[in-house]
Amino acid sequence: MNVETRPWDTSEHLDTPEAIAAYLEAVLEERDPSLFTHALGQVARARGMSQIAADAGLSREALYRALSRDGDPRLSTLSAVMKALGVRLTVEPAG
Image (cartoon, rainbow, N blue to C red; front, side):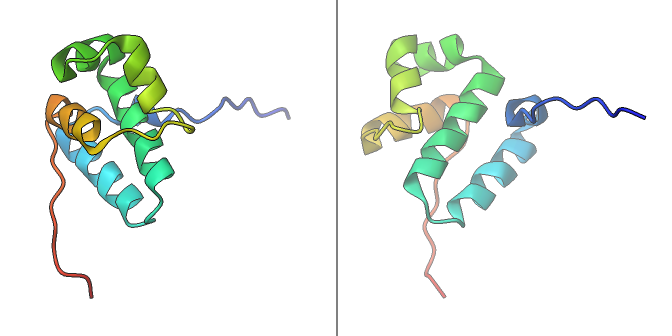
């Protein structure tokens, strides 16, 4: 019997604010900035890249570049994107 599979698309499962927050929180625990940037891209794609870009004051192309695996966005860009997504970073003591 053949089993049909398809590639996993994270953005298909980011359909609630709670799911988005849980996903980004889990990614932050990995302490990998490029992984976090990629995760923000997944969330932005799930929410509509054009709308998130507009809400963040960026062009769609600039947003794609900033949130790509090779992107290295500035904190101001990350902050604008996170605000457009309706999430925020918080800081707490380590340990």
